[in-house]
Image 1 (cartoon, one colour):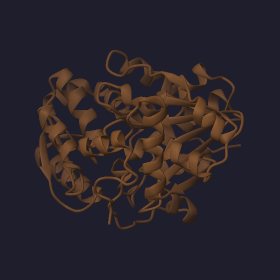
Image 2 (image 1 turned 30 degrees about the horizontal axis):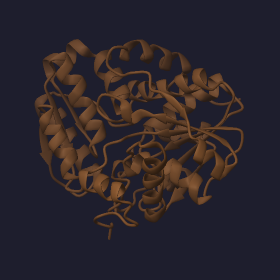
Image 3 (image 1 turned 180 degrees about the vertical axis):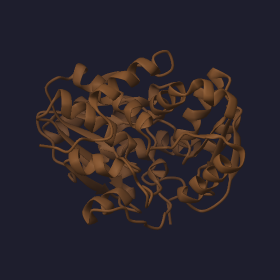
Image 4 (image 1 turned 90 degrees about the horizontal axis):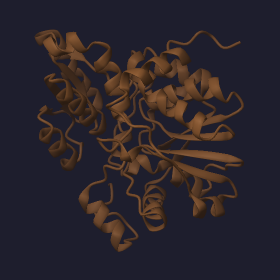
Length: 332
């Protein structure tokens, strides 16, 4: 019997009601060419069509709407590698709530511009998401703002879990769900929902092999810290926090494994999706496709890949459209 977890299937159902009107139910589309390559029946869950270009709007809406009156008075603050901050800014603006986003120096300039375009107060500094979280915590302490944690929060996890509810409804015979993994909010929420509705399904995480903190933490059984390195999957950068409260415990209980992919494999995944489906995926959103194409992950039956975000940099999109074999600025 599994231990009681901090987020339940009922919590995910409650989050689905909260996020209505902000996040959308995203399509699950067959991926014929990817199926031919792998021998599985592969579908893509296209979270890039969300209003902010990534799944993060689900968790942000779940959290901010759960404390809407308090947030309106105090304002909200978060730390982000780009997509979560954009989601927080979008939801906050729709509710008339002031928002501040703390980002590290590694966040791509396009994502910083998008944050400012939403009216967010953007604080840039530090070399990691951990530095951004420290800055956000300071604003909580000094200004009384409300923290919308990028992953280690029950309401945020429950919001991300609504993806799992939709997958179970759209493909009840799913055998494997492939999920990008960073701090663990997405894979934790998806696991809670999928394992409740489809108990025989596997949930497998995928991360870049540069600074794969959750993979290392699962292997060692406790949170670890790794140096952040430049990567195409910049939205997956960052740690899980040495004081991690929720996501590691859920992942240890429910996730069936984590596989790692290289920068070359991520770029090939981005190119494959654009070439065959005319869909733009950022690096972090393409890691699942990369794992299947490279053979790092073998699938059978009905496989659903969570294509988590579409917020690639403009230079990357141009290079993908040209069919370039390498990204415009390869990570060092």
